[in-house]
Image (tube, rainbow, N blue to C red; front, side, top):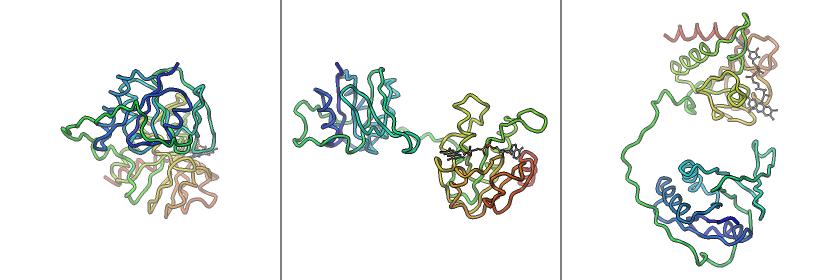
Length: 292
Ligand SMILES: Cc1cc2nc3c(=O)[nH]c(=O)nc-3n(C[C@H](O)[C@H](O)[C@H](O)COP(=O)(O)OP(=O)(O)OC[C@H]3O[C@@H](n4cnc5c(N)ncnc54)[C@H](O)[C@@H]3O)c2cc1C
C-alpha cells in the first residue's frame, strides 16, 4: 500500500483529483516566498515527516525548479510531465519531443511524480482536511557561485554559431582518432571567437553509447529537428554531414558555411552558402593561428 503525499503551493485541484483516484493521501501546502531553495527544503521536510512513498506535485515552473533538488537530496527518482497515472501506478509521458508516448512504473521509493494539467478532473471542495501547512524556511543567500564566463559555450547573443559534428571523433586519413586535439581546437576557437557552440545529434549521443566524446558538449548544444533552432547571423559547420534533420535547425541562421572532406555531403546540396571541401583539423588549426 503506497503512502501518498501531495505537494502544493496553491490549491491545484487537478492533482488532488488524481490523488483521490489512487487512494487515501496526505497533503502539504508549501507557502512562503517562491524560492527554489526554500521550496525544496520545505518539500523535503514534508516528505521525510510523512514517510510518503509516492509524492505527487503539479508540473508548475515553481515545482519544476525545486523538486529536482529534493530528488537529489533524497536519492529518489523523479519523473516530470506525467500525463496519466493509473491506480496500479503506471505513469505515462511523452518522449523524444512528443514523438513517442511511453508508459512505465518504478519500484524505488520515494517516487516523485510531477503531473501535467488535465490529468484528472479537479475536485470541487478546497484544501483537504488533513493538509499540513508548511512555511518554507527562510533561506539566507551567502553568495553566488557561477562558472567562469568562458565555460558557458551556448551564447545566443553571439554573431557566429560554430557547429561540431561527429567527424571530429571519427578515424582520420591515417586510421587513427584525434579526439583530444579536436577538443582543444574547438574550445580554443570558441574562446577566441566568442562564438556560440552547437553540435550534431550524432556527436552528443556518443556519450550515452560509450564512444569517444567531447566532454564539454551536452544535449543542450544539439542543433536540429530534435534540438535547438538558434538565430545567429552566421554559422560555420565542421565535420558534420549536413543531413536534413540537422540542417532544419539552421533555418534562422543568416549565412551558412561548412567544412567537410566530402564534396557530396548534405551542405553541398544547397544547404550551405559556401562549402569548403577540406580537412577541418587543418582549417581550424590555421584559423586559431590567425586569431592569435
Ligand atoms: C527523427 C530524427 C531526428 C533527428 N534530429 C536531429 C537533430 O536534431 N540534430 C542533428 O544533428 N541530427 C538529428 N538527427 C540525426 C541526423 O539525421 C544525422 O544522423 C546527424 O546529424 C549526423 O551527424 P553528423 O553529421 O555529425 O555525423 P556523420 O553523419 O557521422 O558525419 C560526419 C561527417 O564528418 C565528416 N568528416 C570526418 N572527418 C572530417 C575532417 N577531418 N574534416 C572535415 N570533415 C570531416 C565526414 O565527411 C562526415 O560527413 C535526427 C535523426 C532522426 C531520424
